[in-house]
Amino acid sequence: MMDHVSYIYDNFKRPVNSLRLQVNAICNYNCMFCHMEGTDRNLSYMTPDEIERVVRVAASFGVSRIKITGGEPLLRHDIIDIIKRIKRHVDDISMTTNGVMLHKLAYELKDAGLKRINISMHALNDNDYLKITGNTRNFRPDVIDGIKSAHLAGLEPVKVNFVVLKGINDDKINDMMDFCLENDAVLQLIEYEAPRNMENSYEYIKYHVDLRNINDDLMKKSIEYKKNTLHNRPVYSIPWKDGIVRVEVVMPMHNSDFCMHCTRLRVTADGKFKTCLLRDNDYFDIKSFDDDYLRDLYIKAVKNRIPYWR
Ligand SMILES: Nc1nc2c(ncn2[C@@H]2O[C@H](COP(=O)(O)OP(=O)(O)OP(=O)(O)O)[C@@H](O)[C@H]2O)c(=O)[nH]1
Ligand code: SF4
Ligand code: SF4
Image (cartoon, rainbow, N blue to C red; front, side, top):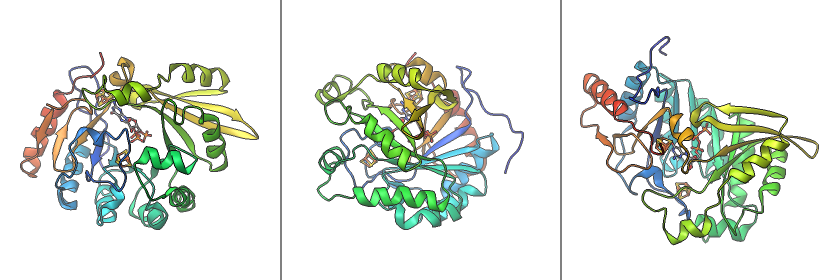
């Protein structure tokens, strides 16, 4: 583990202290809003050894947090090996998952070094859940088991990701607060984010909810208010029934404050540094996993980061 290493800053004074690491670009779901981390589907994969080399070099530049994403990361049969290798270089490892396979893997993930987990659950009733996830088979009970298993295994905090969709689930936020209170989870309310260049699409206009009013309402109800340093996202503690629910609000659209606090570099499943979710001409192809080459490419990619909303 590296201590006292300085971060590389981009030309907008934003340090890079974390990597968002896509380990595959396939999924057993087909969510209506999936952005696949701004990449194509079905990319080839880096090996665990190649992933470790990228992480080692990033850690040598002060990166101390890794977010594992996909597609669905738990579909990789070697995910435990990948986490163990990342853990040699970085302590704060988290994952974002649809949760379907989590109940089978939570303990192994924790033992391998995973610290915390975000689990997507965008509906509490089966019809809406199936519609949103584009599925015919209902895995919602498995996801709920996954949330419980994550706690039992000690993956903390557990966050439940909920993309707010007009006319589908935007009237269910209170129910989600109940659910998160019962399941000791942080509720992460996420604004529907248009994939690149899709802001005028029929789907986006139909389902997008501007979260500012909901955010203002939460702020009024909160007894404590913190910021996630990543994206400056507000995190509220809300008195709810007989307890307190923490709610984080993710407002990525047309939000220059969000982008000015974007402190991570992306790595695509097939081995490219990517500077921004919403750009498609920003790939730095990792052609060699040699340390010197990787170090130069890492610096080049960081220096090319530009806030999307300015
Ligand atoms: N525009 C944009 N949106 C992002 C970015 N990172 C996350 N998001 C949005 O936030 C949602 C939730 O992200 P997660 O992967 O669950 O969480 P995270 O951003 O890693 O943050 P933590 O909850 O602190 O682990 C994603 O589905 C995106 O819609 C980003 O860098 N840019
Ligand atoms: S679970 Fe995630 S990766 Fe899979 S389709 Fe849904 S949004 Fe995309
Ligand atoms: S610059 Fe903005 S849009 Fe791009 S990845 Fe960072 S937060 Fe997301």
